[in-house]
Length: 150
Image (cartoon, rainbow, N blue to C red; front, top):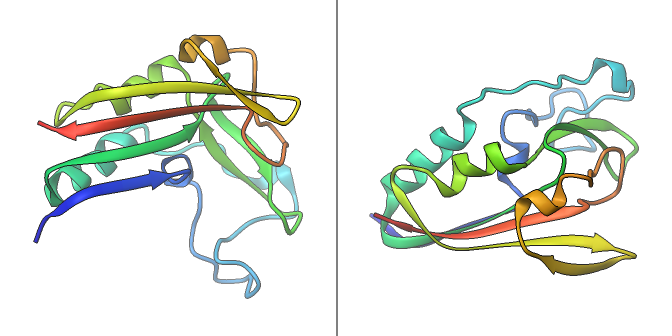
């Protein structure tokens, strides 16, 4: 069975950081109260593995992806329960792992920056270098892409 389309809306950045909750019955994910104990690393091939799997189940369809963008790297976030984790904030090099994946052709990509709680389109991912979601409630920059399976 194949799919016509797949959407990863604010998902890719969590893969490799969030683990299923074993000790926190009120949460789907294991999170910590102490930010100094949060793991800030993940497998560098996450994007390739995820997109390889999507390509395998996708017919000739499309994949829509949105991710937080900014200074890049692992960013500490505090969730709605006051617990800490990290997610990946994309910058030019890590974004290329998505839009440059060998099994997809990038049809469109767009970038947005949050200013005074209003999202505004910007010209490139590089224009987001100075922003970060570090310990904020939501992303400060956003990258979106439509990919078509080759």
